[in-house]
Image 1 (tube, rainbow, N blue to C red):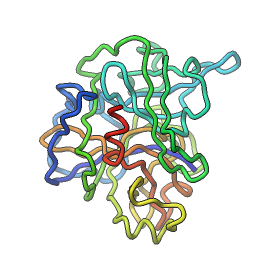
Image 2 (image 1 turned 90 degrees about the horizontal axis):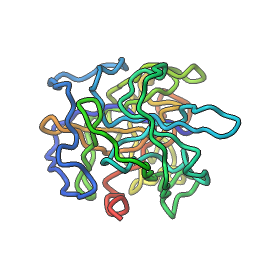
Image 3 (image 1 turned 120 degrees about the vertical axis):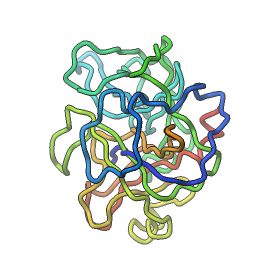
Length: 268
């Protein structure tokens, strides 16, 4: 199953990537973070994750409906999971920015005019599950709307990370109307391969995170959203919510596309 991401804090040696694709003031939130970890999921604070977007699908028969999360890179580009947009037309998507409650009516919605899915995305294995979208009009930045920072190429990702999204609050449950955040331990790559199988988990392109005792995870509806780590009060995108076996099951961590592996692709 596919899903979405959570929230990460950790003290690794982590320098900001000098990517033109990101904003000068990337990764800055109006909520000043402390040093304590978040235990369990919780409601996000206003403006805490200004890079988080709701990706909505619509057509002649379906009103705009949240299907995935996404992350603002800059005023024109959003990053999400390939499986959220693969083989679908750009005109069928709307990006909603600066939103915390899915029930809000007064929201900023932007039309999409271009979708670029990773050319080696495999919809069966979810390998290279990453895509970028371009919105028709520039995103207006504010204290509630900002872009994420990108990590250095091939950055080693360890410690804890935070995922955010509106996905199901439990396996087989209902989507959350409020944006949720949860801190997850990153699982060593060798352990991910053992738990998920080397035929399913590709260490170079994926990472996995979650409480191996169960109870903390991303779930359906979170797909495409951010997995982040903080350094010096700035947020860096280290993963994109991709897939998992159920939600929050024991010894079955969620899987994310490993963003440091795709920096050069994102820059194209």
